[in-house]
Length: 447
Image (tube, rainbow, N blue to C red; front, side, top):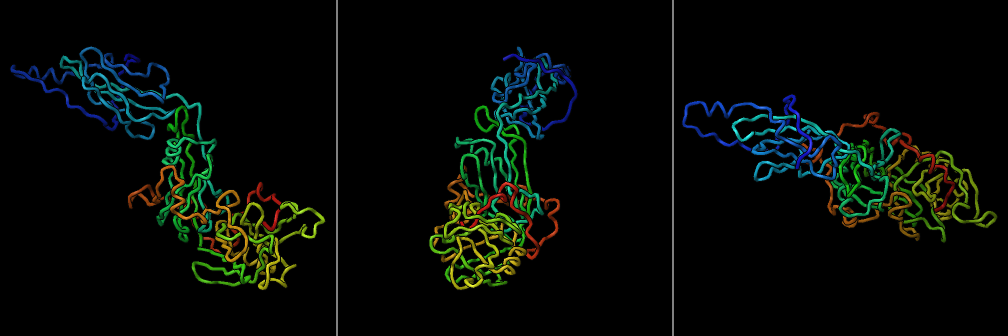
């Protein structure tokens, strides 16, 4: 196949990918044949590539062809990442083409060694660029590390794609382009929540004081026919102490544990019959020192015997629909004795302030012995921990667990701590992140 001619230029050193030994010269006449075999010539006029002056189609293989009696030797195509692209030389040594896919919108360098079949040989350098992708999939990574970058040990990692991905092979390519690295290393898994959203969680809670890096690295890489990965994204975060708050709706007590040790027991009240608090593991989503809670947001009409419209202090949110741990001075008489709320966990103002100050986004709040239904795994917060790990793995496109080990232990690379997250903000400090403005505007309670 004829295309553009490669123009001989500089001899930039590039990593060799496929090396073929030149044919041995035979001679019975002194050193003349040896001299001919070393004869350097301009091989550029003998070589053509499939990049004919236009940007190459990344969906097609790039090829090099030799004219007439010329033969190809070493052909090296190097991508924007500095790595050679795999290729294959035909048996007649006159045609070579890439076997690895090319990236869209990327620049490549080419080095070709060839001989003319008459004892002359040489090298030629060239370059080409692939056409930009017309259809790209970008990713928004979470959690948002706009705060201190320190989260609780229950915080899942999230990826929101710019559009739906339904093809199984395309989903696998997306997962291959996602890297999670942590120190210490853990075993975790990806879960496709829907066609646009993925979550990652370890088999168990993150260890305390773990550094974590998440990256989406598919720039220009083919995901499916006509669809390529968008620009690279990454984020870094760190976990703080292991904070677990266990709310027992049967005894009306909240047990606060730090790194496995009980720090405090707080009398509480949870949802009354008909408004029972959800059972299961929830993850702190955000904190609001002052929030307006209205029963109308959970379907209770104003004027009803169950209606309310309250200014609530020290509210720690655990579901998007409006379940909080918060101050409830109006129900101190019931706290530690019976359940009278509309689904939230209520406590005295002083205890709520203490809980607020000693909790951060990503910490664990687990409710047990309630008569309510189980926490939703997805859609109402982070209920990921209510899904068994074996079941979680089944919802990965690759269908297998992921190690977050660094390269020295066999996988990936070790991240440094994120900027601004190198100093510890212990659990006794104030919350490290707050609910976003869009979610903070929700006026709800008791669900």
